[in-house]
Image (cartoon, rainbow, N blue to C red):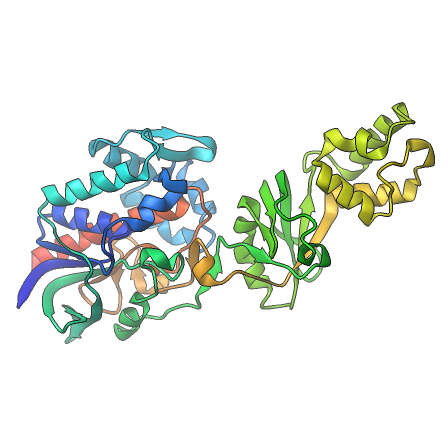
Length: 421
């Protein structure tokens, strides 16, 4: 029967980081994954360029992790985003900063990041087994004993790190296997839900595909509560689709839509095309332009303000003929058009499913995890890292930062624990 100091289950960002950290502590490490290759999620992250972390201050990063980000304060005091940058540079991966603090490899290739991590695992003589499914994590007398593979092989270990991800992006191997192993150790799994996911709508203009494929730049999208007050607002690009809404602003709003849908059957999303000017100012400026060219058709006079398809859609919604000139313009209807530019609402009735989401909300309750060690409070020798934990952030390097930080701490502490026995 084989024995290792530490077994890491899962070869995603957190698992790779954990195996390296445990190896650096001198532990004899087995990294085991059911897929045919390691780092599959990492290889497709950031559009194939791998957004390895974010250079914003820690306080800002935590704000961008609305799902239990505060739990990571302790973890960041041990290993943070700047440490991630140094870690990769030591592996020979030079990083560059792009918009909103996002950090990418200079190569613009995610595979170079994966290759550097695999090279480091090789240097540390970490044993790697792929195409290997796990049947169970074994616990004996209140402590972790090892694992049983699907073909019945028993592998013993002093410590086990569960780094198998959540249930989103299942083609990379994240199919929720780890939740049962966590529950068997006495852990609570909080309700799972999709986050960073497109939103669905049954609005007639969506069903008729009137705006399908139209992208709005830097629009302010707000999720409204029952009283019509904004719960959250994000100013980013958004996209109309054949089923609803997508794009960065919508993905960021999606987890709030999911939560609000528990309170009401439909949730209103408000789209403000001109977040930098108030409604009255917008009305006066547009009205003045029309007045100065009284014979120009509405659609031609207002074309510089927005995409033509959106302009024609809003004009039609408010009963305004695009060919109409200023001299025939009904002021009340034009005011209603301007209001739509600032406050157009779309009813959302759901989101795409969890397997279509970029990130899983919910998971192993962080109340049951030691925040500086990523160790289980329920079972000695058991550690968790990455997306299996009930921690979720926005896209933009925040989830991967959480995965790498929690992975590093799980590996270091599992390595220390196993070597102390």
